[in-house]
Image (cartoon, rainbow, N blue to C red; front, side):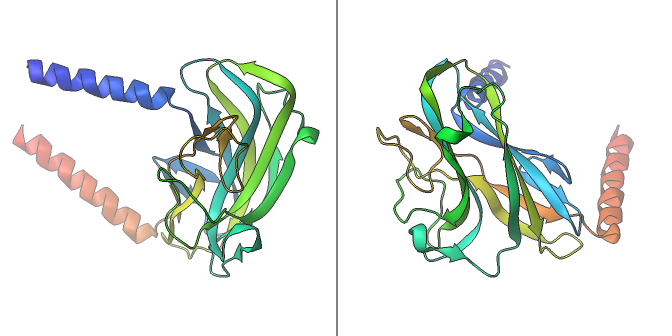
Length: 234
């Protein structure tokens, strides 16, 4: 019993640590639903995701922040990289929100730019190996350093089209706020997310079209059978 109680305590501490960590988080917008790290989308049409910034457990002094949202593989790397023609997600447009971050004037930063990620990454990066991803980069600055209360802030909404096949086709780990790894006293480099003197990203998210009706029926039938078996055991 004590071991179980200790396990719950450790789990609670870990959850608090995750909730308080500096990070970016993706949420579902129009045309998408989110289950864990899987965005479910229709077979055709566009879908929108939102990027939220979590500042961590304490108020933070910020003079600028950067979001590098990865959405596909690049041919090449750095500023000369181009989107791989086989990418299944196609960026359409984006809107800056900056909810609660009114001091970060859109004229003081870089507008949304599609480009390849930097060719050099740190040890704690959430990139994989080459080819590095194509990203939509956004940078915003304030005229004077701002003390931002701890919490979550909606930064922007991004709209994509996709070329996923109907019936459950999936782009694995296709969407994430890119992190080059480690902290730096320099401004965020091309391809790195974070805010002043700090770099962080998000977990990786997949995108999937709705499963075929037959697959859904089999899933529901299987869950019903498991529930019936449990009832019979009682």
